[in-house]
Amino acid sequence: MPRKKPEPSKTSEQDTWREDASQLSYEEALQALDVLLGQLQDDSIPLADLQKNHAHASIYLDRCDLLLSQVEQSVRQLDPNTMEERTLDTSNNE
Image (tube, rainbow, N blue to C red; front, side, top):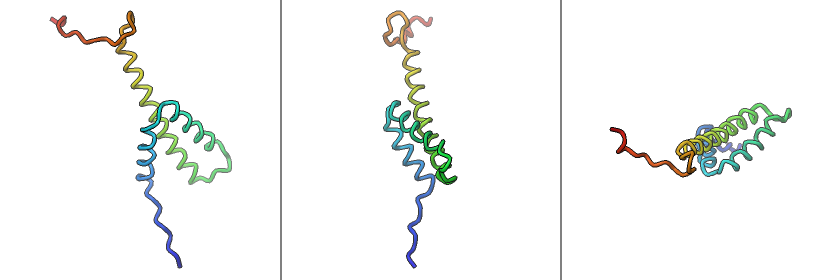
């Protein structure tokens, strides 16, 4: 009787997803998330696939959150008068 190949562990699969997602732009991650959300809304999807897609979608959502936070941080560093990056002047802290 032929042996089944062992399935990759969920952790290594999720690590691969995280690595792949880390290379995506915000728009790409959002598009991938949208595709998975469409699949999650399909009533005919098996429960195992539902759980897998949910975990995968969560990784894309984390990527979008990270990228948004980075942009938010860079916007906070802008001088509102010049819209250029502020420089920290430590000489006036006396």
